[in-house]
Image (cartoon, rainbow, N blue to C red; front, side, top):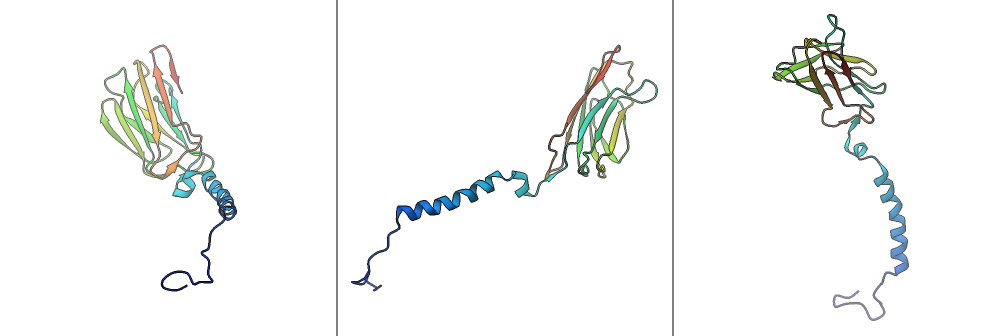
Length: 172
C-alpha cells in the first residue's frame, strides 16, 4: 500500500455476508451460555439454601409465643441476618429472649423489634426468639427475615406470624 492509496495491483478487501453470518453463528452459543448462568453466580452471591422462619404459640406458663428460625441443611445462616418483628393489638409486645444461638434484640418501639444474628446459625440448627407477651391477651405478631447483602435463600420461608384471639392461638 502506498501513502496515497492502494497500489495499482492491489484491490480493496471486502468481507462477504457468509463470513459475517459464520462469525455471528459462533458468537450466539457463547452469549446463550452466559445468559443461562444465574445472576448471583457471577456476582459472588452466597446461597444459604431454604431456611425457614416459623411462628410459635408457645405453651401457657412455660414458653412464650414467638418465632423460630431454622438454617437450611446445606449452609449456615450468616451473621447479620435480621428478623424484624411487629405487633398489633397490644401496646407492648414484650421482652424477647434468644435461645439456640446468639443475637442482639433492638427495641425500636413498643410494638417493633429487630433481632440481628451476632453468630452464624449452623446448618440445620434452629434459633428461637420468644416474647414475655401473655397468651391471655389478644395480639398479632408478624416477622420477616432478611439476609445480609450478598446472600440469597433459594426456596426459603422468610415470613411468619402468630395470632392470638384469647380463645385460639395460630402460628404459621
